[in-house]
Image (tube, rainbow, N blue to C red; front, side, top):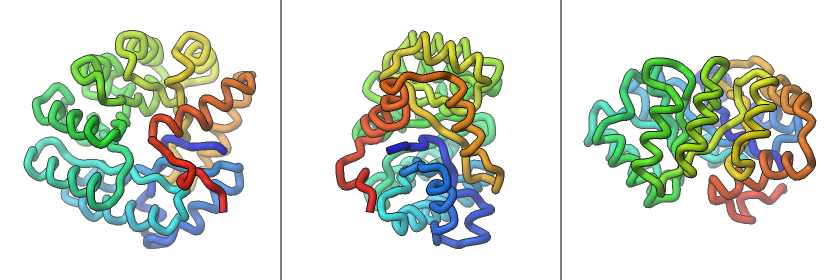
Length: 256
């Protein structure tokens, strides 16, 4: 079993296939990836299209036989609208996680509404995945402070600091034990340090696949092969940790 914890049901796939995930799943099959945590795409750039994008992600995931795990977004600028949409996604549409891109969406996470969102996420056991590594709104240290305020909410650094802020991401994981790191974007030398020095029970893997037709999955798997991971490391990062983070049950992880 391999779980990709950072994918998108991209606008390109929506335009090509509507809500049919067949071609998207063929991409996973090509590399032996069994499941993907699927985030929105167009809603991250256009706040007015968030409900539609959340509906599209839910529809595609519903047709994936459990292989696509839905992850919604909301826009915190409008508190009432954001909380209503979040509750709709978590209670009506079966979403398992929440995604924010503070740099692209243009908001600070140090706000009262984000505190409310974290509380709702904890009540639903839904981790929050952040784009991180991009100043000024998407730094790992900002997410670590949020995590310390909300110890029952699992906070995932979706890019583990990207290229320049991976050391800060490593410090964020040490600062709060509910911060997780997704190995999606740092260069190999940085990933070797992250795997060696961070809590191995809070590491997952992702590709950023799906927002374009580029072969990100093959590329990210080749990067992981360069790390000389042990069998225990690979099992934890690709399977055991994602299953625990996302609360997957045996029915969710079966291969039909």
